[in-house]
Length: 235
Image (cartoon, rainbow, N blue to C red):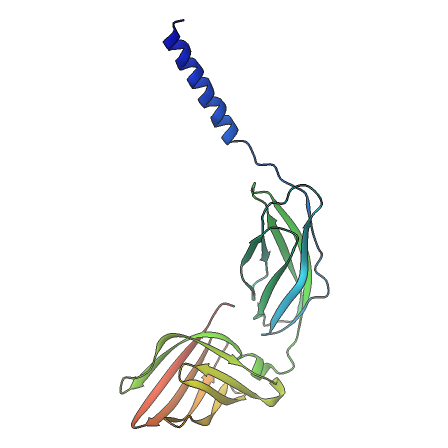
């Protein structure tokens, strides 16, 4: 074998070794996921889980982990996943839109840098709403206005919340300001008159499990007859 061929053989062999080295599975480290305990949600409610999923390494050099929750239909988590290096407490906000009360099962998924997945199941209970008329309409929405003459916003975020469900009233946060409305169990909203010095507003509304619709008149120099449609976000 001449020098040139020997050099080519060595070069090819080195490339093969380098290729094999690149394809090696990264080393992973053992870690533990704390158990979720005593989690309960109320129908249509928002529950913030804090310091409930402790994750730490049992030894070795730390590497990042991705944590996400697999949840039953009607329950959503924000954020959808968390990626960081243990030790840490994974914190999620759970949005519950479950229509039926009972016990549910979820899974905490942890994924390491090598793609290995560990699944830790947990259970939590959903309690029946004691104020379903108010609870059904609260939540996060996207909205759009349709006014005559043309006026308003489109594609905005809106929130319907209540400081006290027994009060039977909700706050509706819109770009123009926050409206207050009384919730009736026949799926209607009686909007309190609104006045911010520049405009005044009177109106009514309706709602179901997916939408809230407001019909109102704005007066402030020009009179506008408006319909605002709010569509519930999936969380």
